[in-house]
Image (cartoon, rainbow, N blue to C red; front, top):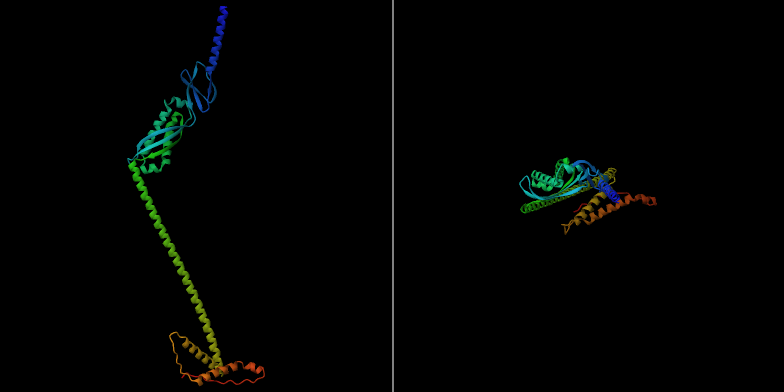
Length: 328
């Protein structure tokens, strides 16, 4: 009985030992993590996400490394620019572990090392820039910090993906001076734009007046050309009429000459009567002379229409010359 009891106890202990050994050799690694395996205290290999096996009592899990992208909040710190202006800077760094072994065994405290490295490089970059450049070139600051940090963290198996400057706060008195400077600059730009607008308006107005004068001059030129053409045609008609009268006189017909003189005589009387500065017109004219003139006109009319009268069977009266009457 004692032997059987001892054997049963041994079996139970052995089974329990086997179960514990198996349980010690099986490890489940969650997604986004890598476990390092140490054999007798020395790094042996890494276990990725999922089910992993180790040799119990010989190997053990060393470090549980997060390989997802992580953010490191950099506390606010003061730094001085190249022109000795003190500013307060807040930043944040984003990094990812690419090599779990290096991140575990090349540096003691990875996050603390990255924090100190970021703060030191921020001071270095800020000290190499003037205040105006620091406030207006944040992208350049982020790029320079990223290059330096990525190169420095590479031996630790870490990839620095981004560094963002959250805020840059200058001193209160300096901020007031900058606000006044910005206001003066904006007022200056407004005055320049207003002057430019007035200049453009004056130029456009002058261009409009110039175009109006050109169009007016072209109109006057066209009107003068038309007037000259009208006078030329009137002179041609007058010359033609004079030539016809001259031919009639040359042929011995003095009625045409009497008609022309009478027409000019009557036109002169019209002009004298229509003159605005003449209120009373005294024309010494004899009734007989006027009657003779009118008779000459009637004789001319009969001579003109004489052919029609002969066509109807009536004899035409011979034309006779009437001398133009002269105003006494």
